[in-house]
Length: 544
Ligand code: SF4
Image (cartoon, rainbow, N blue to C red; front, side, top):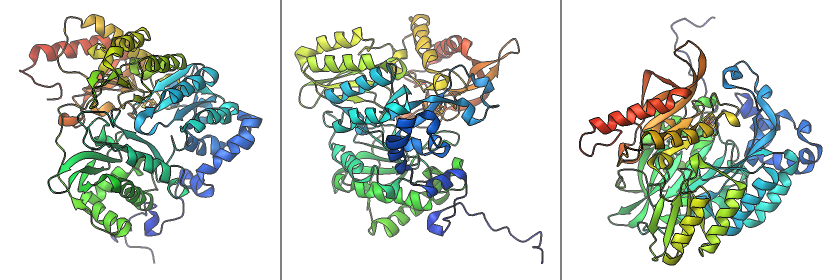
């Protein structure tokens, strides 16, 4: 008998493993089921690096390579307007973007030299500092990948699970262990997570990516990670970490939720493991765009999530804990600051995170001359040199300045970020990095007479994926094709105004008609900033 028209429809399964849905519901899930993505490493070493690009199995090329930090880069000369009409393989170049994960954002001088050397030898001197504390190269050939691993892995760096549906880099405070404001240094927890779980086959097939951040301070954009641990003092138990789950941007942005749990430092790795297992087992695997943990949190709410975490994965109750105090703005660590041991750290601003292998080598030399063996990358595309004695400060600042890395950058240099964009990213609609660099130079001239005493963040993104955090900038720019005054289709941006993290944590307003062509960007930003400066009420912040 045909079902009655009024009978309630059975809800479709969402591919949640724990509910018995083990049959893959889309090609990505099939690919991960057919072969553990970590197996691709052996094929790169034994087959593809020897036989070259054309020997690569397409399922590895566009899928499993990511687990080794490799994406094909965009074929030069293909502009954003044509992208929609092209098949993905038409956009593939035979070169790769390679991401080195730097958990905690931390390197020593020897590691930094190796990163610079890889760029010079294999990446045409390209290197970008990403807003997740990674280093990203371009122009990498598959033939050179094993040699790159040989250079970086003995020094404790890796590309394993730098991309893909797996636990990505664990971000940490760039000043962990040295900041005078820090009560507990969470570095041991980050190290333990990496040692126990990165490259672990039990966690290498998640519904989608899983982004982590652990810091005593609020300097790692914890509100928009899949999981975060943020430092907090418990009135009875002392210092520990407040657990946040389910943040993320892209097309369905969501601020993470507190689970209301206080976690002591030595329990952070196990709680992290519990949360990622909840995601692996209950995460939605039917539709890629609903596969992040934020959708589970949205449907369950934090109470149910915590209960399942405790009952099914940890086997115990977590301790209730207070919320951490919220700073006015997230901290970017640019400038010269005192460490708790009396030495200093110096934060400098590369233009939109763009450096080069040559620059990385020169930073390593400069740090060494200043007596430092610790350099950190930040979630704001910045570089910080730690452990600088007072009498070495001036020399280091001059050295870095000569490299185009100012410790006292203009407000525009300091608060502008850009994603990879159309130069190399296959998903991009518009150019971002070079445009941001030129825009900063332009704004420094145009707005020389208006120096706002609050930073105004400007984030340029090449498409809706929001890799440079469109929605949490004062002025967030999402790349798209727009119509100019003469009716031409040109590169431009949808504007999101008034987003932020910290006290202003929330998403910018996307004003429907508010689109600007790339050519008009300088005029537009100047107008907005001048209006803010003129109409500002007392110490009002941009997002208010
Ligand atoms: Fe590529 Fe879009 Fe991410 Fe920019 S925001 S790096 S264009 S995917």
